[in-house]
Amino acid sequence: MSEKTYTYEEFLEIIATLRSENGCPWDKVQTHESLKPCMMEEAAELLAAIRIYDKTGNPENMIEELGDVLLQVVMHAQIASEEGLFAMEDVVNEVSRKMVRRHPHVFGTGNADTPDEVLVNWEEIKKEEKKEKDWIESPLREIPQELPSLTRAVKVLKKIDKLYEKGNTYEQDVTAICELADALKKCDPQKDSKQLEEILSDLLMQVSDVARIAKVPQEQALADKIDDLIEKYE
Image (cartoon, rainbow, N blue to C red; front, side, top):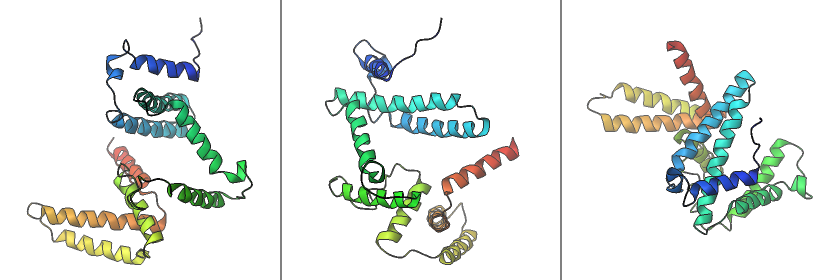
């Protein structure tokens, strides 16, 4: 006997049942806040599944992890529905409108013949949309604090360079890195912990600026180096 095949609508009903009065004790008590670590973990596991697929050609794990990410999305939408805020239909409708609005070269009369032209149009449309968003404090503070710090640093530096002033050159950053490295040599880790922290944070920011200028994805570069280290010892 073959296993049952579920529809998207049935999946929504399953999540609603888990959250209902006679549902699961764990699912019933979850909130937007309590689920934040779950979303981060599931997103990371999806990235791992993509890596596994690239290495093996087997998509089985990716199917599972995409489902787990979808579960998080639907859980948040279900909680919001119970709170009278919005429903999953609103989420689907909003992202559909966004895709149509930001692809005028597909759904309208706009033109974009290359990926670079698409990105330019996307950013211009996005900028217009943000004028109506009253929760955006400033161009730099709209970059989420929840991003990994290395990723956030590059995004902040890119926006500073674009909106406020010309950033350092590659040569200036490398010089600063060398000066900070010299300062590190003079620190006593047992006595100068605060100074050491300041130097290291400055060093990480300078390295982030080098990554920005060189267009090196530093999160991925560090992840690859960690894998090399694991391979070395295991």
